[in-house]
Image (cartoon, rainbow, N blue to C red; front, side, top):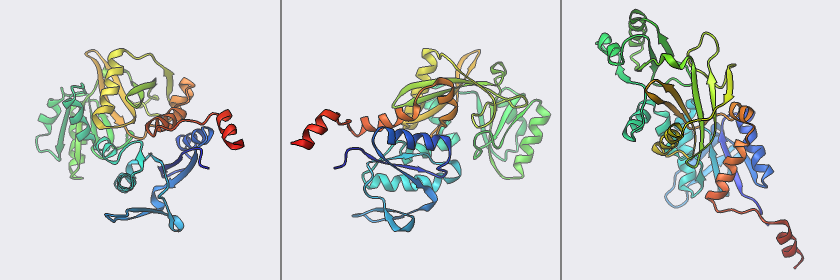
Length: 311
C-alpha cells in the first residue's frame, strides 16, 4: 500500500548540496524520491496520452510531484520537460512559465516595476550607438553592465569611470549582445539580502557580503553570510516579487539603499547550503512540506495504520 508521495527532482547534478538535501528531506518524511537528470529525459507529445520517458525507456507517469531545479544553461529543455509533466497532470513546484519568466532578466524586471517593486535604475540596449546617453540614463559612473544572458555574476562588470563604461559597452557591441546597464548603489558596500520564499512566505533570510575584489555577493564562492532580520517592507517586497513571477519557491535578492530596499533579481532555483548553514533551518524539509500541503497529503498516524493492518 502506498503511504507516501512519489516526488521527482528534475535537475542536472545529483551531487549538489541542494539536491542531496531535498532527496534526504523527502525520504525522511516517508516519500519515495527520484532524481531525474534533465539531459536523460525525452518526451512523447500526444493530445490524448502525453508521456515523459527516462533513460532505459522508463515511463515517468506515476509521479505525484516534480521539484524543478533547472540550471540556466538547460532552461529551454528543462522548462519543456516541466510543461510535459504539467500536461500529464503532475504538480511542479515552480511551473514552466514561472521559471521562464524568472530567467528572462529584462522581462522579470519589467514585471517587478508593473507590480510596484522598486529596482535600481536600469537601461537596456542592443549594441547601442548612443553609448553616452545610455550611461547617463542610469546616473553615470560608477555603474554595472550585464550581458542579458549572464548568470550568477557571469557577464557582469562594474565600471568605475565613464571611460571604463564606454570601453566595456563598446566591447559588448562587437558581440552584438543584449545588455543591461544598471545604477551602482555604493552604500551597499558589497552586501545584499537573500530572502528565501516558499508559498508566498519568507521562511529565512541572510545577509551576504562579497569577497574582497568583488562587488556582488555570491553564495557559490567564499564570502561572509549571516542571519539578518529583515524589515516588513523588505519582507513584502520579497513576497510580491515571487508572486509577480508565479514562483512557489524563490530566492529573492534585495539591497538596502538610501531610498529604501531595491530588488536586484529573483532566482527560481535558489541554493540551500548557505541559508541552511547560516540559519540552521530545514529549508529542504519546508519545501517538501509545501508539496504535501499543495497535494493535501497527510502523514498517516502509526496507531491508525497499525489498527487498520490488524483489522
